[in-house]
Image (cartoon, rainbow, N blue to C red):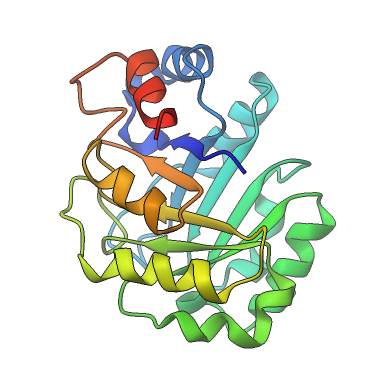
Length: 215
C-alpha cells in the first residue's frame, strides 16, 4: 500500500480550523489525524466530540482517530465513526481491546491497537486477528514537538516482520523530513505528521505533503 500522510489537527491553527482543514485536503492529505485526549491517560485535553462531529459533517475526508482516553470501549459511540475511517485505541487504557475492535469494525472502520514506547510489541499477539493494524508511538503521547525515542524505529521493523501482510503500521511522533524515511524503510505505511513536518513552517502544506509522499 502507498504510505498514508495523516496531518495531525492538534498542530493546526485552532482559531482557523476550517480553513486549515480545507487547505490540508487541497494539499493532498490522505486522512485527518484526530487526537482525542481526556486529561487522564495523557496530561492534556484535545479535540472534543462536538468538534469531531462538525468536522465529519462538513468535510468529505476519512478521519484517523487516535483515542488517548481511558476505557475507550465505553466511549466509542461518542464519535461519528464511519466507513473508511481508522480508529486507534491504546492497549494501556482498555481491558477489552477485542471488544473495542469489534465495535470499530462494525462501523466500517479499520481498528488499530496503539502502543506506547515502553509497551512491548508482543501484547498484540493474541488479538492481532481482531485488528487491522498497529499504531506505534515513537514519542510519549500527549504533546507535539518531542524528540524521537530511537528504539521505536526497530519496533516498527519488528512489527513489519511479525504482523500479518496488509496490516497498517502507523508511526506517530516526531515524524520529520529526516526521520520519516527511516520509519518508511522500517515498514511504516502511515505517518502522523505534526510540528516536525507538515506544520513545521519550513514549507507550505502542499509542498510538505508532496515531499513526504515521495518517500
